[in-house]
Image 1 (cartoon, one colour):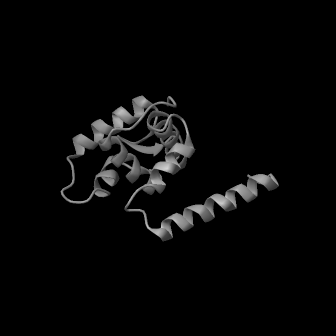
Image 2 (cartoon, rainbow, N blue to C red):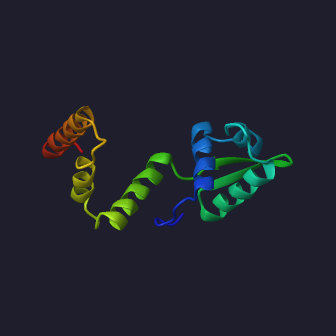
Length: 130
């Protein structure tokens, strides 16, 4: 999987189900969708694309295949966030936080929690534990 590869909405939905399952057959992935569920063939097509992109691997099981994620959700999320910050905030997390803090819909509680998280991480970094 290339670091700059992003998932489409349909691919992301399949990956979220597969990350939750850990591994599964296409029928398990279809079952993970809310109603109305997509066609089996639609999910099979998306899985094939994800396999070509290097997000999933198949393990043959009789006349079918079991699929499992190659990349963890955390690793994908980290890469997605980095690309997002690079693309929309000039590669600056400070610009991201500044944008978030100026949002009218962010509650005081959310801001206080974010500040607390950042202070905790800063303390850990200063100690050399993170």
